[in-house]
Length: 387
Image (cartoon, rainbow, N blue to C red; front, side, top):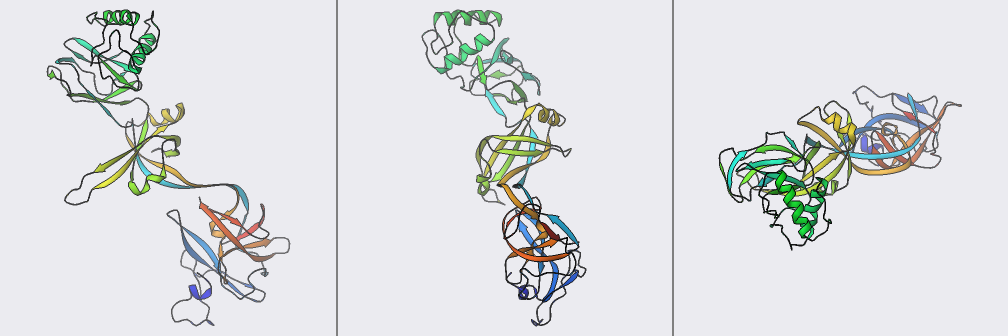
């Protein structure tokens, strides 16, 4: 928009100024100023997906620095603050993504945990031939039998768990020694397992921490075979999952801070803990799509307590798309579109009941405010606002 002609109704000559309307459709208030006429009207601006209204002045060439008779309908102060533009996406509150547990041993399922049960280090995930398959903590999955002479980070992971469970007499390192084997035999005796001093593949399942059983795939009395899924588990802390289109991948990465709005309108701080990509296959009605799945962990005991009231719920997640620190701002509604082009504000001198129009450069739009800079625009300056 470069001047009055940009807002003139079709067929109206330049000498016939239009009667602009306010947001409600009623004629906007006119104010007479020296050297020309000014009218206020609403201009819709799209800022970050939100429709806001700026007010513009239509008048002569002396709009910059001219004075008006009387004050505008409302006023606001120029403030200094940090602006953050956000984008909101839908999310699902739950316990985060699930992980399957596959069997490595053959036998008959003699006990399975209830869905929703929480299992910690040393707890039984399920029972096979009346012998437990045990949960231990660690990032590396079990992939081989562990016995005397074996070395590697998986050995150190096992030994750290044995020590945490109260077994001693060995050094936590990457070597499976005779002392480690003795500690394993003590653990096997307590678990009513054969005291071989070896940890067979499939007897221990490693997970990052305490787990919550989400679903059971197997059933008691059925046979287990290597590679068969037994159950799925999640973490025990509340988390939010968000699905984005691939084009929005840059919106967040691992470690990105977000704000989660819960169903009761309270908010909780969150951090993106995991980012993964999923290709959804084509169907008869849609082409194949690539989706980005985010996991957002809720930070702090207070947030977890607030979220605990909901087993599953739809929530909204606010992502920060832009930040400007310690900038001068005015309400978006204070913006004017000047006849010569560009934006301005109506600076008010309440002592003399006069105003003048000052061009401004705009920056970030966020939360109904806009970053501005211009000649004489300082913190505390009063600007005009529509009624």
